Image (cartoon, rainbow, N blue to C red):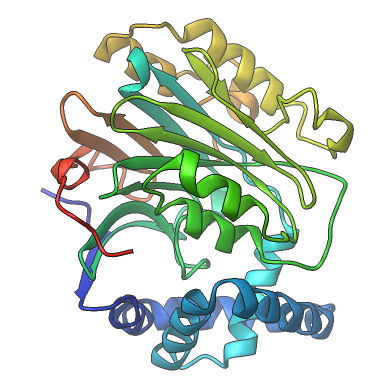
Length: 336
């Protein structure tokens, strides 16, 4: 059994998959663009989007080609699609909680946005040119990779938003997230990806199928790579002492309370009951709990069981649904 809002696409190339996604979700994303066009700063966003698009074209031409194919299939003017994405670049309102335990073999992620964003997320599985990903997918970020992604190269990426003070013209954080959602080796690929100029940054929590954990906190101009001890917890404030001076204005009523609650519940080794209790925790109230009124999706990745359990708020009757992640353990050569 799968969620009603579960979608699969497959193609020989990433462009093929982008076209299918554009056709599938075009109506939804056109409604987003129409809504954004009413914003008083829409023209300013378009101008900013042109700069983001140019930076992406320079550093990630393949992703630019995907977005062009998506926009054409979705019947959305390309720069309008970019301007809508620029709105997401400016907004850092999402509030998520990620926990890693059991020797890196258990990853828990609660995806928070706003209560009215309940219909904005789904589950997507893509298989393109031998590469497979399964993710919590926001319609508003067509490239994907901005929530939780599992890929056939053996990594999970869980994203936490950060508030920071430095900004610049560069590649949007959503594009960087897409790149890091498809890693095959953090030691080899991270340093190259992090030299690319960013407009802003996320925290990228990367966990390999072998249990190796890497947390990468990014601002626009700076980053910190940590390989933390377990259990590991991240919410939406900067943990690195080196980056603390760039901390913006995090939602202090939520991020620190969720962090403290998760730290109190997390253990080096956790039973399934303890894992569920953590992602279900509501002891800090409707706004600041790990499971709060803005939680729109949840996921529990179990590498030992080779499955991910996913919960969508938009389908309350479905509860948790398990999906196989056997594709993460395929050691066959993959096209890059």
